[in-house]
Structures are given as C-alpha cells and as structure tokens.
Length: 284
Picture 1 (tube, rainbow, N blue to C red):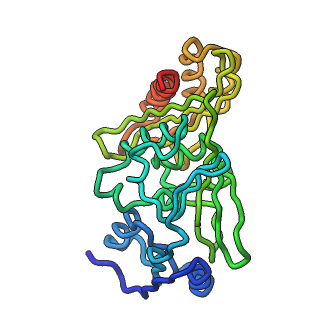
Picture 2 (tube, rainbow, N blue to C red):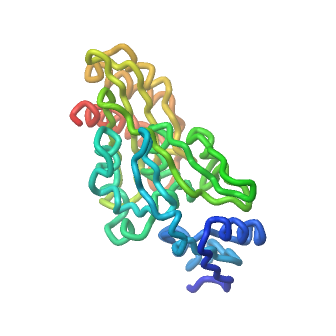
Picture 3 (cartoon, rainbow, N blue to C red):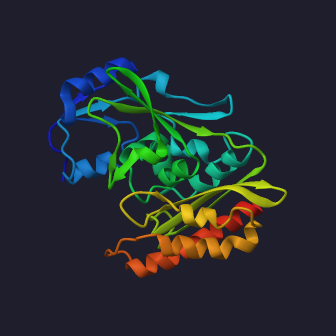
C-alpha cells in the first residue's frame, strides 16, 4: 500500500514548526526519523493530513553534556549512543541500551526523542528515561514547558503532549560515580520488540544501596516503575537483594496477555530481567 495523500511542510525554525502544528491541529504529525510513522502511513494505519518535517531545523540537532545534564535534541539519532556520549554510568548505560534497538539502518535514522514521542511500551528509550528520572522539554505556542518522565506516559502510544506542541528535547541527569546502572531485555530475535525489559539505577553508599529506581518495559500499555522492587534493595548489598527485588517486581506488575506471549510468561520474564539488570549494574 501507499500512504494517503498529505501536505508536506519543512520549517526552518522551532517557532515555524509549532505554528504549523497549531494551525493544523490533530491533522498534523511531526516527521523526524520516520521509522515508526512512515510504516504506519504506508499501511494507512496512520493518515495525517499534514507532515511537518523538522529535519531542516538546526536548533534541534544537538547532543551535549552541561551542568550535570545530558541534553538530547529532537534530531539526535539512536546511532549517536552506540558509543558512550558522556563519561560515567549514564553514558555507559545508553551505549548498552542502544545496541538493542532494532537494526543498524533504523538506528541511523530513528531518533531518541521520536521514540519518546511515539511512546511504544516496548521502547528501550522510554523505559530508560523513566528509570533515570528524565525531563521532557515540550515546545508550544506559549513557549517551552517541562514534563517529568513519570507524567509523560499516559497509555498505549499516548503521552502528555497537547495539540500544537512538539517534543524538542530530553534531559537526563548525568549521575555521579556512586551510581550504577543496568539493563536487560528479552526478545525472540535480535532487533525484535522486547517481551520484557528492566532498567535499574542504583546509588551505592559503602557498598549498600542508598537509592534505587527500577523501570519495566514491554509488558503493558506503557513503561512503569517498580517501586516495591526498588524498595527491596534499600540498605542492602545489591547482589544479596537482587532476587528478592526481582520477586517483588514480578508480583507487582500486571503484564498484558497477547499473541506474542501470555501474561504469566511475561511475569516470569520480569523476574529474570530485573535480576539480570541488577547484576548488570553491579558489573558495570
């Protein structure tokens, strides 16, 4: 099949892009990497009347670390993270995660921010941003506003963005050397969507866990935190508490049952992925 007819615009500034979005409302869609949007248009699952191509906006093409924050512009491709983009645990984590995203051609075109705007529940970047307490910067007619990652994901492919707005930047805290980060996912084949994944961030004090965040992805309608699993690690040696944390994560999640895997199987995967992510953090 071919996409339905649409109007095409290629703005040169964020302000121009936002004005187009405000004018055309829900008929308009942003085009950055297009790795999710274009296939759905080809199958006519998505039929936007207007495409706003932001690839000619130089102000959105940036990736830099400053003041303890990693700032990721809307045109930063997945492939940019295949090597650490910053020293420390976050840069190393992003490099490990990037290798699990689809295949090399997709990583060359798809974007970090596009992944969060699409909000696929099996997206590695969505779960990672949630685990790292990221902040999403949204540009709209009234300027920029900040949305915490915990407030961003509203449901399946649904976010806190409003009509006339676009995701312009994601900010991740560059955690200090006392932090350890880990990642694990299970997919049927390399490059497939994950059936379950876990991302953990642990702050250690004298070898014991002082702070912990665990995010799960691929199991339901949106990525979610596992606060009970994180609480099981506090004050403990992470290796000693890994299994009890994994058990709590499995008990506290509500995985979906679909053609790819039954819910009970996904719950077992959560148990294994959380334990492996904690072990990955320890080894990092």
